Amino acid sequence: MVALAIARQTVREALRRRVMWIFLVIGVFLIALGPVFGFLNPRDSQVVLKSLGLAAILLAGLFITIVTCIYLIPVEIERRTIYTVLSKPVQRYEFVLGKFLGGFATVFVNIAAMGIVFLAMLWMQSPNHKVPPEMVKGVMLTFFQMMLLAALAIFFSTFATPVVNFFLSFAIFLVGNLSTVTESLTTNRNPLVSGVGRVIHYLLPNFGNFNIQNSIIHPQIELKNVDAFIMQNIAYAFIYSAVLLILAILIFDRREV
Amino acid sequence: MAAAISIQGLTKKYVDVWQKQEVVAVNNLHLEVEEGEIFGFLGRNGAGKTTTIKMLLGLIFPTAGDATILGRPMGDNNVKRELAYLPEETYFYDSMTGWDLLDFYARLFRIPEPERSRRVKLALEKVRLQPDAWKRSVRGYSKGMRQRTGIAQALINDPKLLFLDEPTSGLDPIAHAELRDIVASLKDEGKTVFLSSHQLADVELICSRVAIIHNGKLLTTGRIKDLTAGERTEIIVQGKELTNGVMDKLKALVPIVEPVYDHTDESGSREPVPTGKLRLSSDDNEQTTAVIDLVRSAKGTIISVVPHKRTLEDVFVETVRKEGI
Image 1 (cartoon, chains in turn blue, purple):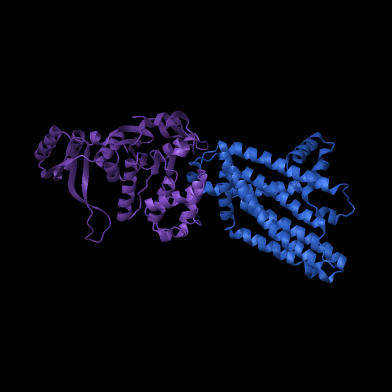
Image 2 (cartoon, rainbow over the protein chains, first blue to last red):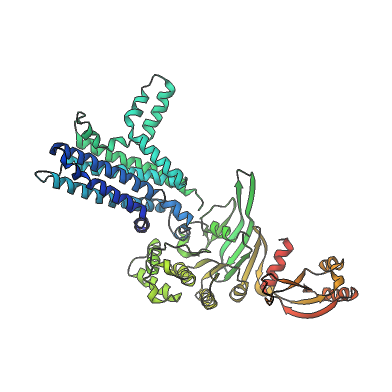
């Protein structure tokens, strides 16, 4: 209940941040640009709308998640609002969990808003007014990808400044999206390179697996069981986020405020 | 009477890694606060008052020492149900209304509805925040309204022990008096108040005991009645010869020797103007006589000799000055 009260308050504060609304508007604007490409033939137009829509949700979601979550804990410490919270019977884990849930809920609202616009555009542009199910899955996977990113940003925010956190979260997100590159490093003949490659590949979160647009852009890559792949990624996001949150709680528990 | 707070050797050191310096914010503090009393915790800015309170609340961790609060270890989450804290500045979520803010804090105590709403209303009424402000954003509140809201959030759980850090600083006289009376009324409700304040007149009025700390070290503690016992004689003297050598002798005789400045602003200058007079103060009759003899022998003039009842301010200034500022 305490974590939920903190989460509720966090959402209220987060939704007041203008920068988040700017990214949301940019995201929706990019999705709405889809029909502009209607001059292409219907098949290409659908591909462009799908790719552009998912990419817009990913990009806007990425910035919304980072700018929302990197500030959640440091702002409380900087403005000293944390004094009146932690002097009450609030465990530090409840505080971190509340902040994460609040950030997570804010990101959910934003991705849901962009997702609804995106799916509505697809529905309108489709000749038989059907929404491709893989696009719903794509939006859903982006959401879980952002959940993992939110946990990463919350983890860094327990010990890093927002500026450092911004670059760290952003860099890890980029490297985590290049899982095919990092995987190739693990088989390098040089033991040092392969060792570093292994650490990067297995330790850093694999954000690349959440990008369903890879299969749109590269339709030759065919997954045997898409549903199992999605479930596996969702489970991965939950487990990795839980580990990050446990580490964040352990660090924050020892932090002076 | 049982101890509400018992501090044993509490120490907080900060290490500046880059300058290889160690700063001792609180130094081996021993203190007992009894249940049901309003205890004044006094010290200059940076003396270690807030650091001590933050350690007791578990916001920061001591380097050494220990403390118990209401019989439980400091920082214990269960004991926090019985505590309240008003920080020096009222740091709030400014977008929230006064009502929502208190509702949020009540949720942190897991107080269910409808009890939560009842407590919020009760707390806002107790601090006399105008009802038309309850549903307004805290951002638009005046300093006095914010401070009232701060005390209201501290009362939301009907605490046994309150830590109040400068609850009346920066308020207009009416708000100041009202909030001071609210703090004083807490004693009648059987609550213990640990009051950190620079408003020594308030402390003298509402506290039963005080502790004075300086540079993290406890200088003195005791009942205000005992600390302010006895009279102090203030002597104002004037004379050209007094500055030449006699000054050192005067300083050796009495604890307080200071020049008198004219603070009236007739010339339009804002700077205090030296009057050429000296103010000497002593609580010892023999010292007073010796001062008068010395001034006369140096051909100085005695302007006035006025006995004063010692105030807490006198005690504070003397105690801290003895330590060296």
